[in-house]
Length: 270
Ligand SMILES: [Mn+2]
Image (cartoon, rainbow, N blue to C red; front, side, top):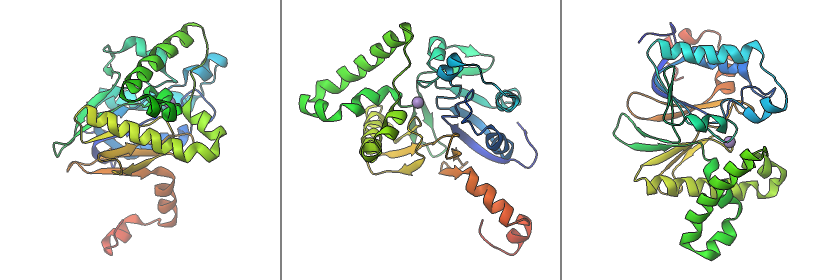
């Protein structure tokens, strides 16, 4: 399964919110990252291709093609690629359960790590409505939560049929900066609860463009971040441990330490 020479080999790679097809996508940095890392399994955790932006006007530079080619090349070389569509690439939700040229499409996945722990892997937009109306739903009790999830799903199918754009939590939270922190917390709490509902040890998601790993809500909460602003990804090493890679920081270190090998020989921890 050898892929790129000199690439760092990990068991699993989790990426989300690339937003290919938009000017915001940091495709160059992403390509460098994909050259630096190889994985047995790759999860694309939603909002990979931005269908809404493409609908509004075609934008697809060569660098975006290169990213897709790079990922497909990893598949040809033996990597397993699982694509869990998000709200911006929901057009792919029509192909759930289908295997497209070696790419498995699913709504969500349960990933078993090397140490036997199980993780729910899901984009996360499925919880937008619940997050937005958390205060009201709390007043209405337990049933309200599942009702809201149900309504959220069908409301968005309807909006989509009507040609309306999907409501976006991250865009909305940015407009209301003061509330963003509360909403991020609520989102994290809901996703952690969903992991518990699946009897999983944690959740790995994206959607809110806020990369972080913690276990404040009883299970592991892992958010892969995005490749629009933060340029982050999550990797699982062969011992089952997870690491949040902040690619821009890694690149800065590379620039300031031109001789990484020399640093290693002198015993400095990387
Ligand atoms: Mn999203």
